[in-house]
Every structure is written in C-alpha cells, then in structure tokens.
Length: 144
Image 1 (tube, rainbow, N blue to C red):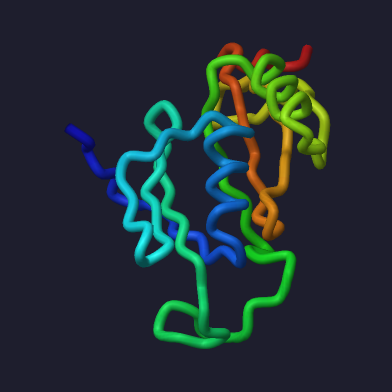
Image 2 (spheres, rainbow, N blue to C red):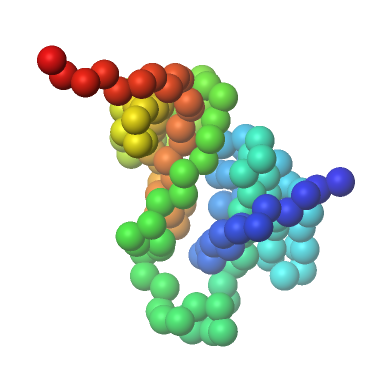
C-alpha cells in the first residue's frame, strides 16, 4: 500500500502523455495511480513522489497566473537516486539531454561535509530536476 509523503509537488503539464513518457520511460518513475479521464497521475521514484496534471485552462484555482515555459522557474526538485551515473546514462539513452552533467559536490552541514553526486535534467515543460546520490559524510577538519 502506498504511503503518501507529507509534501508532494503537483506539476502542471502542457502534454500529459509526453510528460508521463518522460517520467516513466525516461527517468524510471512508476505510476502509483492515475485518472486518465482527468489527465492526472501520481508517480513515485524510490520514495520520492510527485503528481502530474495537464492544465487545460491558462488560469485556474490551481494556477495563479499564466503558465509560461519554462515552468517552475526559481525552483528545482531534488530527488535522491541510487546511482547517478547509471541514471544519467539511461536518461541520455532515452534521448533526453542533461542540463548539467554528473559531478561530485561537497556541501557543509554544521560540523560535517556531505559529498553528493549530482546532475540536472529538465522535463518537457522545463521543470528542473536535480538527481543526487549520497556518497559520504566526513567531519570538517580545522585548518592549522
């Protein structure tokens, strides 16, 4: 049985079938449930969840203004993955370009540094997705 996350983004999309193909065939998301009559799907990816819904009206209760591509400006969705290199290759083999290639990054968190392997890809409507693989955590050493 699906356990719903407490925060689940719902992405307004311009072409439901194209977006569903991108997320499921290109990225490996799974459909948890869908309402085809509403052009809606609830998707999951190893514990991450999101919803897709095609927007027929420019402005509605769910959109506070006109949707202009790229959608989702000023926001990116960070999604944990098991192997960034394998997933990036799968995405490229499916015919989708990476926005930023796989790279290892260090992020300070209080007294530790968290090392992640990241890459970026945009969905067909321009939503920015950041896939990250946790590599290690190490203490920060004081400089002598």
